[in-house]
Length: 248
Image (cartoon, rainbow, N blue to C red; front, side, top):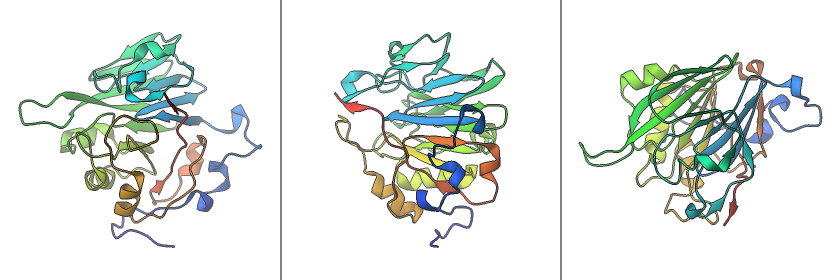
């Protein structure tokens, strides 16, 4: 099976993943610890027994319409319409939009100060979030535009799942995304914030990132269901998710 030159990173198509990672009638609520949905752009829903979190809800002006969303917690990485449309989420009790350490229902949430792209001294703040559930950790880099320094890398603590922007322009491009993946060594990488139908942003296509990773095209999954036991081994898998957001 092909691998990229970096010894830390290997890719697998969805067909090559362990069966437990793929949608299957076998799954019941007690069969997995976490289910991850992609709502388009940088918006994700993380559903566990402990807590449901929505990250980076977007406004309709970006060209997509979010599905109905409900969660106890909302996180916002960057205070712009593509990431801060909190009112799209029903029933939330907490909204976090900056650096800090938070705890809700036994889930630890760490906001790590970072930056959107821009000239030195003029860069807008971005907050990358690390979510630590009972037995799984997820890193969401938000609207990150600059590579992370050593302090930021250490704060992120090698998450099991890393969700990384790849679209270029004012955010990470494919090459810089791979640099961060190499540093953080996650078990699973989910790309986000790239060109998709209806989106009114000029972003690179997914294929550019797959090429940088040495990966071939693969079928996206409707959602990703995970247990800690599914993450054994040293290889980093690239997983694609279907966007649940529709063109406006």
